[in-house]
Length: 620
Image 1: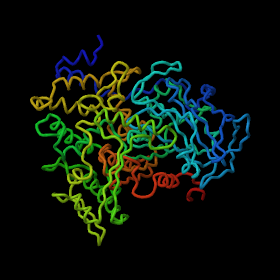
Image 2: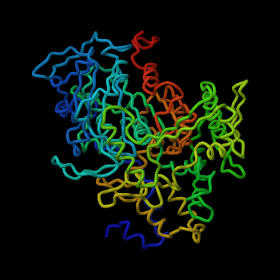
Image 3: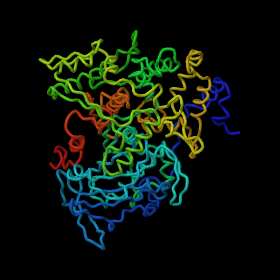
Image 4: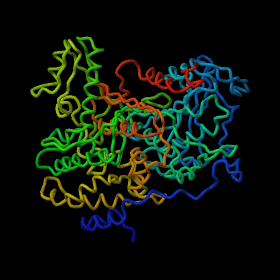
């Protein structure tokens, strides 16, 4: 008889422990059977011929000089046709075009230039609009709104759809289809491969493809950026018919060259313990109130994260260890990582005071919908707000507060327990502890546990659901804590002995590809490809260029995991540069210290894309 969540909940927690111990920590999935190695003369070079982009079917926006194609299928066997398609937007000067019956036949104009780029050096921007891990639907109608800064800068913009966190039904013929992890990532990888399969027909530099993501989209982007061409996704890619090689037999890659993240919810395997270390340990209300078992869980998870972080053996650019050290009172509020994290807060606050003229009104924004142009952002935002309200989360919002002087502002943050010092004469800022910062600037908005929840009802729980179980627990780390401390939790308010068994069974539930939740969580976590002792370490190509921005007045995405990701990337030999920026006063949005996100992004991309010689910059 198959072991299901329902049949197991009556069993003892100790039986769950024995079961999971025997089944867990499985090895990384073996590479699939060789179906034709890159450049192998025996491969069928016509295998993916149906994925060739029809260069005689372009539409044209004459007013803005843009060629585009909408809802182009990017894989041979789409099961969710409304989502497994992409739209491509190309600046007009990059094409020589001939009109044919309302459509345009386009060929690359090798002398075409836009801004600092040519038709041979134009980078590809690849946005991910998946708030709350919602599906990203392919665009069926054209709109120039929002595209202007990207296209006028000379970039080619590719908006790819993908499945969302839940399974669905395709009324166009394929019927039921699976969603969630890792299908969302596999879809996006298939779209990247489609672009590269058609690179010879497009005015792009296929080696300069930059993925953009905010929040949940940032989670997906971070995995794309660390798992390029990883074998863990091969079976999923083959099932949808993603390109493995091009018409000459050369391998087609899904590895981005750059990744830009804003408030990424990265690292789902450790995100709950990170959240409790960063925020939960400094409050004692609601799910962290005295006497509740979840307060004890919060404390135990907070104590777990430093051990994991220290196992990464992170160092700063000078080689000093970035670790967390035990302290009395707060959990591990010392060590190189703690000092560096506090330093990030101080740098961000200093930048804020240097650019701010008082009196000032400070607005903190939390977005709900898609952050990037290309989809129906308004409909998506409305859906996400409804989802957030149903789960007790804080939906899209903006709060504003005015201050007459820097002194008034600092006093409002310090309250009765001063933790922030600002000296105007020297522009010096000092943050004495994380507790004050959390309590006054970034109080936790998520319960313990906010991602893999005790009730198993979050959007993240949905991303690991299967056809007959729409939500599943996915955190091995939480299960370990529950199993180790269940006797301590007994008798505390709210504790149920069935929790341990529920988590244990869920981790071993297999999806339609025969993979357990634990295995899927491993493959869908960027740290899996960066940690030295991970089963997937080194199996993915890591993007060389990274930009990570975190709003410091939000707690939807833990600052601790975002900063740890940046540090782990800096320690990776494949990474050329990592720009991490904390933004004082910013919320869960496209956080920037100054200027517009689009302008800053494009300036960053220009720093490594479009180079025409070994020493020059774009267009040199």
